[in-house]
Image (cartoon, rainbow, N blue to C red; front, top):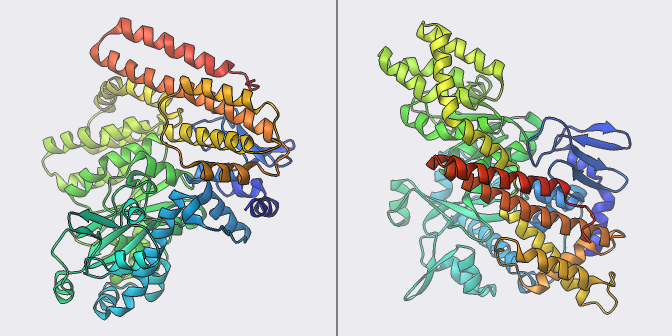
Length: 573
């Protein structure tokens, strides 16, 4: 595997890879950009073509092309390798994956399940006809690996068992459910839509029951319209969007992401050549989803039902997107039609609706008067819905523009509108500043990832007859000391897995000791950031309780931690 890593790095230039995500500008012999990992207006993210590394002087993240893809795509090491191998035209090979890597075993069984569902689909003409009636082409069925789960208790489980897959792995992948009589398949009598991570690996499924008449034909049990995989070690619904791996390149090219709700909406949108579309699959849009999208574009188009329920369901999503300084537009769907219906009726109509999408505040200022004829109710709705959006706009000129539009619509002077904006601003001001600081912190998952890399490096060196670092015990002692002051870590994988990752990450590197020092430094910094986050939570609580003295004490502590972060030496030993 190490030779494969070397071949990938030889074929790919980190400048080209990063340039696919960032707008780079020349800075002497290096390149610079605004950091994709924290909000900033002045570029502090630098890429060294000579060293094939990157470093941000604002948030102190750094590494090579593999760690860059890990971070920006939100992938683990293997997922990042897959993305880069596909880009480089290199075939990844690894023996005895299931035995050496428990997490990889889950990916393996999910891919086997996908192949099973794909193979089963043609055996059920009723299901094939159902998909054709919904307008899904054979090409799209293959592209999204759509399949079918027979309405049988153990068809998938028995298939996987014959492949030598243990029940424990099936269960960890969310494919089976245990009962007093044994296990049974989680998905039965459903059209299966695989959900993938950014690299295209299957991480979960969404199973749609057929229409009632088709369900009766196939004997499918009456149940919820959709059943999704439970959260597993590889699937977290707050960080997964259906169709993201198929759409990400198109999102980058179009500099825009279209968000729909369902699987059929997404597939038919791609079929209509709007292939920069992703789907939330019935899950509320989260900040993590928006972070995924923002890596490729800051322009988001929401395709919503133009009714009161649709407005309510997306209100929080719009605020989250505006908070991340994204441009949010709304594609107004004709009453009673969803994207899939529109594509079936006329693909050009769907493309037209996307092209004519409007800024979210313009959309609401046009729609609300149609929904609420009573002027008093309209005024309340504008205060309830539109004014909060103005608060989440970060540009003063944008705020002034929409304040003027509200005043014109309500036929009043701007002063009362500004008074309402200022009143609400005072209410959320402290929370917004706190959120800004918290946004600069790194999730605990990153702390765990660094601990995993360090532990693997130590195990690798400690198992060598002639370690590449003579005083590896000193580094191990430093790591142990840092662990004493760190939050509890998620359980890492087995030693073989950690050693394997260390080998492929560091073998052949002539900077191994320097890299180890940098990772130790990053780990120390992340511990301080985590402390800072907890202090900010305490500050919120003190402010909520009106305990100004306690809030002042916590603020001083936060300043101390911040100073410690800035003065942390780069040469940790």
